[in-house]
Image (tube, rainbow, N blue to C red; front, side, top):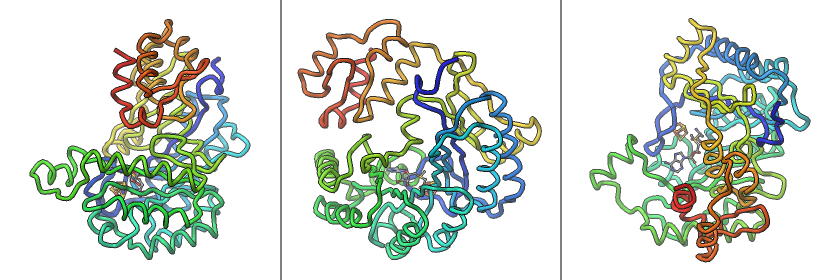
Length: 385
Ligand SMILES: C[S@@+](CC[C@H](N)C(=O)[O-])C[C@H]1O[C@@H](n2cnc3c(N)ncnc32)[C@H](O)[C@@H]1O
Ligand code: SF4
Protein backbone atom coordinates (compact mmCIF):
# COMPACT_ATOMS: atom_id res chain seq x y z
CA UNK A 1 0.00 0.00 0.00
CA UNK A 2 1.24 3.50 -0.82
CA UNK A 3 2.06 5.28 2.40
CA UNK A 4 0.70 8.75 3.11
CA UNK A 5 4.15 10.26 3.36
CA UNK A 6 4.89 9.14 -0.18
CA UNK A 7 2.06 11.14 -1.63
CA UNK A 8 1.81 14.19 0.59
CA UNK A 9 -0.67 13.09 3.26
CA UNK A 10 -4.42 12.59 3.58
CA UNK A 11 -7.15 15.12 4.30
CA UNK A 12 -10.89 15.65 4.03
CA UNK A 13 -12.48 18.67 2.35
CA UNK A 14 -16.13 19.47 3.05
CA UNK A 15 -17.87 21.91 0.74
CA UNK A 16 -20.78 24.03 1.99
CA UNK A 17 -22.21 25.44 -1.23
CA UNK A 18 -24.36 28.29 0.11
CA UNK A 19 -23.74 32.02 0.49
CA UNK A 20 -25.97 34.90 1.54
CA UNK A 21 -25.23 36.65 -1.76
CA UNK A 22 -22.98 36.09 -4.75
CA UNK A 23 -19.86 38.26 -4.87
CA UNK A 24 -19.35 39.71 -8.36
CA UNK A 25 -15.79 38.32 -8.76
CA UNK A 26 -16.45 34.80 -7.50
CA UNK A 27 -16.70 31.72 -9.71
CA UNK A 28 -16.61 29.18 -6.89
CA UNK A 29 -19.43 26.66 -6.60
CA UNK A 30 -21.60 28.85 -4.39
CA UNK A 31 -25.34 29.38 -4.50
CA UNK A 32 -27.88 31.61 -2.83
CA UNK A 33 -31.01 29.88 -1.49
CA UNK A 34 -33.89 31.26 0.54
CA UNK A 35 -34.17 28.24 2.78
CA UNK A 36 -31.81 25.43 3.65
CA UNK A 37 -32.89 22.40 5.63
CA UNK A 38 -29.82 22.03 7.82
CA UNK A 39 -30.90 18.73 9.26
CA UNK A 40 -31.30 17.19 5.80
CA UNK A 41 -27.89 18.51 4.78
CA UNK A 42 -26.27 17.18 7.91
CA UNK A 43 -27.66 13.70 7.29
CA UNK A 44 -26.54 13.71 3.66
CA UNK A 45 -23.01 14.89 4.49
CA UNK A 46 -22.71 12.11 7.08
CA UNK A 47 -23.85 9.52 4.51
CA UNK A 48 -21.25 10.76 2.07
CA UNK A 49 -18.53 10.50 4.72
CA UNK A 50 -19.57 6.94 5.56
CA UNK A 51 -19.30 5.95 1.92
CA UNK A 52 -15.93 7.66 1.50
CA UNK A 53 -14.64 5.76 4.55
CA UNK A 54 -15.45 2.43 2.89
CA UNK A 55 -13.06 3.44 0.08
CA UNK A 56 -10.22 4.56 2.33
CA UNK A 57 -10.12 2.28 5.36
CA UNK A 58 -7.25 2.65 7.79
CA UNK A 59 -6.07 6.04 6.53
CA UNK A 60 -4.98 8.69 9.00
CA UNK A 61 -6.67 12.07 8.67
CA UNK A 62 -4.23 14.95 9.01
CA UNK A 63 -6.62 17.73 8.10
CA UNK A 64 -10.31 18.52 7.86
CA UNK A 65 -11.25 21.65 5.93
CA UNK A 66 -14.71 23.25 5.77
CA UNK A 67 -14.70 25.41 2.65
CA UNK A 68 -17.27 27.02 0.44
CA UNK A 69 -19.38 28.84 -0.29
CA UNK A 70 -19.71 30.09 3.24
CA UNK A 71 -19.30 27.33 5.80
CA UNK A 72 -19.59 29.83 8.66
CA UNK A 73 -23.30 29.75 7.77
CA UNK A 74 -23.42 26.08 8.78
CA UNK A 75 -24.93 25.19 12.10
CA UNK A 76 -22.23 24.40 14.68
CA UNK A 77 -24.17 21.23 15.40
CA UNK A 78 -23.58 20.08 11.79
CA UNK A 79 -19.86 20.82 12.08
CA UNK A 80 -19.74 18.93 15.35
CA UNK A 81 -21.57 15.92 13.89
CA UNK A 82 -19.22 15.83 10.89
CA UNK A 83 -16.07 16.01 13.02
CA UNK A 84 -17.42 13.29 15.34
CA UNK A 85 -18.29 11.08 12.41
CA UNK A 86 -14.82 11.49 10.90
CA UNK A 87 -13.30 10.53 14.26
CA UNK A 88 -15.35 7.33 14.22
CA UNK A 89 -14.60 6.47 10.60
CA UNK A 90 -10.85 7.10 10.31
CA UNK A 91 -7.73 7.31 12.47
CA UNK A 92 -7.11 10.91 13.42
CA UNK A 93 -3.54 12.19 13.30
CA UNK A 94 -1.97 13.85 16.32
CA UNK A 95 -2.31 17.55 15.86
CA UNK A 96 -5.08 17.30 13.29
CA UNK A 97 -5.80 20.67 11.67
CA UNK A 98 -9.51 21.53 11.45
CA UNK A 99 -10.10 24.71 9.46
CA UNK A 100 -13.31 26.60 8.82
CA UNK A 101 -13.62 29.38 6.24
CA UNK A 102 -15.61 32.23 7.73
CA UNK A 103 -17.04 35.45 6.39
CA UNK A 104 -16.41 38.19 8.96
CA UNK A 105 -19.93 39.49 9.40
CA UNK A 106 -20.92 40.15 12.98
CA UNK A 107 -23.47 37.32 12.92
CA UNK A 108 -20.92 34.77 11.83
CA UNK A 109 -18.23 35.98 14.23
CA UNK A 110 -20.57 35.45 17.19
CA UNK A 111 -20.64 31.78 16.21
CA UNK A 112 -16.84 31.38 16.50
CA UNK A 113 -16.99 30.04 20.07
CA UNK A 114 -19.55 27.43 19.00
CA UNK A 115 -17.34 26.41 16.10
CA UNK A 116 -14.45 26.06 18.50
CA UNK A 117 -16.58 23.93 20.82
CA UNK A 118 -17.48 21.79 17.80
CA UNK A 119 -13.79 21.01 17.26
CA UNK A 120 -12.58 23.66 14.79
CA UNK A 121 -9.02 24.78 15.65
CA UNK A 122 -8.19 27.14 12.79
CA UNK A 123 -10.23 29.86 11.13
CA UNK A 124 -9.69 31.38 7.71
CA UNK A 125 -11.57 34.64 7.25
CA UNK A 126 -12.51 36.16 3.91
CA UNK A 127 -11.74 39.79 4.75
CA UNK A 128 -10.84 40.80 1.14
CA UNK A 129 -10.39 44.54 1.78
CA UNK A 130 -10.06 46.85 4.75
CA UNK A 131 -12.09 49.83 3.57
CA UNK A 132 -15.82 50.05 3.13
CA UNK A 133 -15.84 51.51 -0.37
CA UNK A 134 -13.85 48.61 -1.76
CA UNK A 135 -15.77 46.05 0.29
CA UNK A 136 -18.95 47.38 -1.27
CA UNK A 137 -17.48 47.22 -4.76
CA UNK A 138 -16.52 43.60 -4.08
CA UNK A 139 -20.12 42.92 -3.08
CA UNK A 140 -19.17 41.99 0.46
CA UNK A 141 -21.74 42.02 3.24
CA UNK A 142 -19.35 43.04 6.02
CA UNK A 143 -17.75 46.38 6.84
CA UNK A 144 -14.10 46.99 7.74
CA UNK A 145 -15.21 47.56 11.35
CA UNK A 146 -16.96 44.21 11.42
CA UNK A 147 -13.81 42.57 10.07
CA UNK A 148 -11.82 44.13 12.92
CA UNK A 149 -14.34 42.88 15.45
CA UNK A 150 -14.16 39.43 13.85
CA UNK A 151 -10.35 39.48 14.32
CA UNK A 152 -10.85 40.17 18.02
CA UNK A 153 -13.36 37.37 18.42
CA UNK A 154 -11.16 35.03 16.38
CA UNK A 155 -8.18 35.79 18.64
CA UNK A 156 -10.23 34.94 21.71
CA UNK A 157 -11.13 31.56 20.26
CA UNK A 158 -8.36 30.31 18.00
CA UNK A 159 -4.60 30.12 18.12
CA UNK A 160 -4.37 29.70 14.40
CA UNK A 161 -5.90 32.48 12.32
CA UNK A 162 -5.64 33.20 8.63
CA UNK A 163 -7.36 35.77 6.50
CA UNK A 164 -7.72 36.50 2.82
CA UNK A 165 -7.25 39.81 1.08
CA UNK A 166 -7.72 40.56 -2.60
CA UNK A 167 -5.39 43.12 -4.18
CA UNK A 168 -5.05 44.67 -7.65
CA UNK A 169 -8.56 45.97 -7.15
CA UNK A 170 -10.22 48.78 -9.08
CA UNK A 171 -8.49 52.14 -8.52
CA UNK A 172 -6.02 50.63 -6.06
CA UNK A 173 -2.58 52.25 -6.05
CA UNK A 174 0.63 50.60 -4.94
CA UNK A 175 0.79 52.95 -1.96
CA UNK A 176 -2.73 52.22 -0.82
CA UNK A 177 -2.12 48.47 -1.07
CA UNK A 178 1.12 48.79 0.89
CA UNK A 179 -0.58 50.64 3.75
CA UNK A 180 -3.52 48.24 3.75
CA UNK A 181 -1.18 45.24 3.86
CA UNK A 182 0.98 46.77 6.58
CA UNK A 183 -2.10 47.40 8.65
CA UNK A 184 -3.34 43.85 7.99
CA UNK A 185 -0.02 42.53 9.29
CA UNK A 186 -0.61 44.24 12.65
CA UNK A 187 -3.59 41.96 13.19
CA UNK A 188 -1.29 39.11 14.27
CA UNK A 189 -2.61 36.40 12.03
CA UNK A 190 -0.10 33.58 11.56
CA UNK A 191 -1.17 33.06 7.95
CA UNK A 192 -2.38 35.28 5.11
CA UNK A 193 -3.78 34.41 1.69
CA UNK A 194 -3.20 37.37 -0.63
CA UNK A 195 -4.84 36.94 -4.00
CA UNK A 196 -4.54 39.14 -7.03
CA UNK A 197 -8.05 39.94 -8.30
CA UNK A 198 -8.78 37.63 -11.22
CA UNK A 199 -11.57 38.45 -13.61
CA UNK A 200 -13.35 35.14 -14.16
CA UNK A 201 -15.66 34.33 -17.04
CA UNK A 202 -19.25 33.82 -16.03
CA UNK A 203 -19.09 36.27 -13.12
CA UNK A 204 -20.62 39.75 -12.89
CA UNK A 205 -17.12 41.26 -13.06
CA UNK A 206 -16.44 39.10 -16.12
CA UNK A 207 -19.53 40.51 -17.85
CA UNK A 208 -18.64 44.10 -16.95
CA UNK A 209 -15.06 43.56 -18.12
CA UNK A 210 -16.19 42.19 -21.48
CA UNK A 211 -18.43 45.24 -21.92
CA UNK A 212 -15.50 47.53 -21.07
CA UNK A 213 -17.33 48.69 -17.96
CA UNK A 214 -14.96 47.48 -15.25
CA UNK A 215 -12.80 50.55 -14.92
CA UNK A 216 -9.65 51.27 -12.97
CA UNK A 217 -8.05 47.81 -12.93
CA UNK A 218 -4.26 47.97 -12.55
CA UNK A 219 -2.24 47.15 -15.64
CA UNK A 220 0.11 44.13 -15.67
CA UNK A 221 3.13 46.17 -14.58
CA UNK A 222 1.39 47.64 -11.56
CA UNK A 223 -0.06 44.24 -10.63
CA UNK A 224 3.43 42.70 -10.88
CA UNK A 225 4.84 45.48 -8.67
CA UNK A 226 2.09 44.83 -6.15
CA UNK A 227 2.96 41.14 -6.09
CA UNK A 228 6.69 41.74 -5.68
CA UNK A 229 6.09 44.31 -2.92
CA UNK A 230 3.67 41.96 -1.18
CA UNK A 231 6.36 39.29 -0.93
CA UNK A 232 8.90 41.77 0.48
CA UNK A 233 6.56 43.27 3.07
CA UNK A 234 5.39 39.87 4.26
CA UNK A 235 8.97 38.60 4.48
CA UNK A 236 9.93 41.65 6.58
CA UNK A 237 7.04 40.81 8.91
CA UNK A 238 8.20 37.19 9.26
CA UNK A 239 5.60 35.63 6.98
CA UNK A 240 7.24 33.49 4.32
CA UNK A 241 5.78 33.20 0.84
CA UNK A 242 5.57 29.42 1.10
CA UNK A 243 3.20 29.30 -1.88
CA UNK A 244 2.41 31.74 -4.68
CA UNK A 245 -0.43 33.48 -2.81
CA UNK A 246 0.09 32.17 0.72
CA UNK A 247 2.25 33.57 3.50
CA UNK A 248 2.87 32.05 6.91
CA UNK A 249 4.99 32.18 10.00
CA UNK A 250 7.30 29.20 10.35
CA UNK A 251 5.16 26.15 11.11
CA UNK A 252 1.84 27.95 10.48
CA UNK A 253 1.48 26.85 6.86
CA UNK A 254 -1.97 25.52 5.97
CA UNK A 255 -1.45 21.78 6.40
CA UNK A 256 -4.58 21.14 4.42
CA UNK A 257 -3.49 23.08 1.38
CA UNK A 258 -0.03 21.53 1.67
CA UNK A 259 -1.73 18.17 1.04
CA UNK A 260 -2.95 19.52 -2.32
CA UNK A 261 0.35 21.14 -3.23
CA UNK A 262 2.39 18.11 -2.18
CA UNK A 263 -0.02 16.07 -4.26
CA UNK A 264 -1.33 13.94 -1.44
CA UNK A 265 -4.72 12.25 -1.18
CA UNK A 266 -7.89 14.03 -0.22
CA UNK A 267 -11.55 13.24 -0.14
CA UNK A 268 -13.98 15.87 -1.43
CA UNK A 269 -17.34 15.80 0.35
CA UNK A 270 -20.27 17.97 -0.76
CA UNK A 271 -21.51 19.51 -4.02
CA UNK A 272 -18.84 19.92 -6.66
CA UNK A 273 -16.02 18.83 -4.34
CA UNK A 274 -13.16 17.09 -6.15
CA UNK A 275 -10.99 14.40 -4.64
CA UNK A 276 -7.83 12.47 -5.33
CA UNK A 277 -7.60 9.12 -3.62
CA UNK A 278 -5.24 6.19 -4.00
CA UNK A 279 -7.17 2.91 -4.25
CA UNK A 280 -5.31 -0.38 -4.70
CA UNK A 281 -2.20 1.63 -5.53
CA UNK A 282 -3.97 3.59 -8.28
CA UNK A 283 -4.66 7.31 -7.95
CA UNK A 284 -8.27 8.13 -8.80
CA UNK A 285 -10.07 11.41 -9.36
CA UNK A 286 -13.46 11.69 -7.66
CA UNK A 287 -16.22 14.12 -8.60
CA UNK A 288 -19.68 14.93 -7.30
CA UNK A 289 -22.62 16.87 -8.81
CA UNK A 290 -22.11 20.63 -8.46
CA UNK A 291 -25.67 21.80 -8.08
CA UNK A 292 -26.69 21.49 -4.41
CA UNK A 293 -30.09 20.00 -5.21
CA UNK A 294 -28.61 17.45 -7.64
CA UNK A 295 -25.99 16.44 -5.08
CA UNK A 296 -28.59 16.04 -2.34
CA UNK A 297 -30.88 14.06 -4.57
CA UNK A 298 -28.03 11.72 -5.58
CA UNK A 299 -27.04 11.08 -1.97
CA UNK A 300 -30.64 10.49 -0.96
CA UNK A 301 -31.32 8.03 -3.77
CA UNK A 302 -27.91 6.28 -3.96
CA UNK A 303 -26.66 6.61 -0.42
CA UNK A 304 -23.71 8.63 -1.76
CA UNK A 305 -22.75 10.87 -4.67
CA UNK A 306 -19.03 10.17 -5.10
CA UNK A 307 -18.22 9.18 -8.62
CA UNK A 308 -14.85 7.56 -9.27
CA UNK A 309 -14.16 9.58 -12.34
CA UNK A 310 -10.98 8.16 -13.82
CA UNK A 311 -7.74 6.49 -12.91
CA UNK A 312 -5.01 9.08 -13.30
CA UNK A 313 -2.15 7.57 -15.27
CA UNK A 314 1.35 7.82 -13.81
CA UNK A 315 2.51 10.42 -16.39
CA UNK A 316 -0.62 12.47 -15.67
CA UNK A 317 0.17 12.22 -11.96
CA UNK A 318 3.68 13.45 -12.67
CA UNK A 319 2.24 16.46 -14.49
CA UNK A 320 -0.29 17.21 -11.75
CA UNK A 321 2.45 16.83 -9.13
CA UNK A 322 4.69 19.29 -10.96
CA UNK A 323 1.85 21.81 -11.42
CA UNK A 324 1.03 21.72 -7.71
CA UNK A 325 4.48 21.47 -6.16
CA UNK A 326 6.16 24.17 -8.24
CA UNK A 327 3.80 26.62 -6.54
CA UNK A 328 5.60 25.92 -3.27
CA UNK A 329 8.79 27.51 -2.03
CA UNK A 330 9.97 23.98 -1.13
CA UNK A 331 9.57 23.11 -4.82
CA UNK A 332 9.41 19.84 -6.73
CA UNK A 333 11.34 16.65 -6.09
CA UNK A 334 12.80 15.60 -9.42
CA UNK A 335 13.11 11.97 -8.30
CA UNK A 336 9.42 11.84 -7.35
CA UNK A 337 8.55 13.35 -10.73
CA UNK A 338 10.79 10.84 -12.47
CA UNK A 339 9.36 7.84 -10.64
CA UNK A 340 5.86 8.83 -11.76
CA UNK A 341 6.82 9.90 -15.27
CA UNK A 342 9.13 6.92 -15.86
CA UNK A 343 11.65 9.33 -17.36
CA UNK A 344 13.63 12.27 -16.01
CA UNK A 345 12.46 15.80 -16.66
CA UNK A 346 14.00 17.38 -19.74
CA UNK A 347 17.39 18.60 -18.49
CA UNK A 348 17.98 20.92 -21.44
CA UNK A 349 14.76 22.78 -20.70
CA UNK A 350 15.56 22.93 -16.99
CA UNK A 351 19.00 24.36 -17.76
CA UNK A 352 17.53 27.01 -20.06
CA UNK A 353 15.03 28.10 -17.40
CA UNK A 354 17.76 28.16 -14.75
CA UNK A 355 19.85 30.28 -17.09
CA UNK A 356 16.94 32.72 -17.40
CA UNK A 357 16.77 32.84 -13.57
CA UNK A 358 13.22 31.51 -13.58
CA UNK A 359 14.10 28.27 -11.78
CA UNK A 360 16.77 27.04 -9.42
CA UNK A 361 17.83 23.42 -9.49
CA UNK A 362 19.86 21.98 -6.64
CA UNK A 363 20.41 18.27 -6.16
CA UNK A 364 16.92 16.80 -6.41
CA UNK A 365 14.89 19.99 -6.08
CA UNK A 366 13.43 22.35 -8.63
CA UNK A 367 12.20 25.70 -7.29
CA UNK A 368 10.56 28.63 -9.08
CA UNK A 369 12.36 31.92 -8.39
CA UNK A 370 10.48 35.12 -7.57
CA UNK A 371 10.53 36.00 -11.27
CA UNK A 372 9.50 32.44 -12.15
CA UNK A 373 6.50 32.55 -9.84
CA UNK A 374 5.07 35.43 -11.82
CA UNK A 375 4.99 33.36 -15.02
CA UNK A 376 4.49 29.90 -13.60
CA UNK A 377 2.01 28.81 -16.25
CA UNK A 378 4.49 29.57 -19.01
CA UNK A 379 7.20 27.62 -17.16
CA UNK A 380 4.93 24.62 -16.70
CA UNK A 381 4.01 24.71 -20.37
CA UNK A 382 7.68 24.76 -21.30
CA UNK A 383 8.53 21.85 -19.01
CA UNK A 384 5.55 19.71 -19.96
CA UNK A 385 5.51 20.00 -23.75
C1 LIG B 1 -14.37 30.78 -2.26
S1 LIG B 1 -13.84 31.95 -1.20
C2 LIG B 1 -14.49 31.20 0.26
C3 LIG B 1 -14.41 32.02 1.50
C4 LIG B 1 -15.63 32.79 1.91
N1 LIG B 1 -16.81 32.44 1.28
C5 LIG B 1 -15.38 34.24 1.63
O1 LIG B 1 -15.77 34.72 0.59
O2 LIG B 1 -14.80 34.85 2.49
C6 LIG B 1 -12.09 31.75 -1.04
C7 LIG B 1 -11.27 32.96 -1.35
O3 LIG B 1 -10.96 33.02 -2.70
C8 LIG B 1 -10.64 34.36 -3.04
N2 LIG B 1 -11.21 34.64 -4.37
C9 LIG B 1 -12.37 34.17 -4.86
N3 LIG B 1 -12.55 34.63 -6.12
C10 LIG B 1 -11.48 35.40 -6.42
C11 LIG B 1 -11.08 36.17 -7.57
N4 LIG B 1 -11.83 36.22 -8.66
N5 LIG B 1 -9.90 36.82 -7.52
C12 LIG B 1 -9.13 36.78 -6.42
N6 LIG B 1 -9.46 36.08 -5.30
C13 LIG B 1 -10.62 35.41 -5.30
C14 LIG B 1 -11.20 35.25 -1.96
O4 LIG B 1 -10.16 35.88 -1.28
C15 LIG B 1 -11.91 34.27 -1.05
O5 LIG B 1 -11.76 34.60 0.29
S1 SF4 C 1 -16.36 34.93 -2.39
FE1 SF4 C 1 -17.12 33.67 -0.72
S2 SF4 C 1 -19.03 34.73 -0.04
FE2 SF4 C 1 -18.54 35.55 -2.03
S3 SF4 C 1 -19.77 34.28 -3.43
FE3 SF4 C 1 -17.68 33.40 -3.34
S4 SF4 C 1 -17.82 31.85 -1.82
FE4 SF4 C 1 -19.62 33.18 -1.52
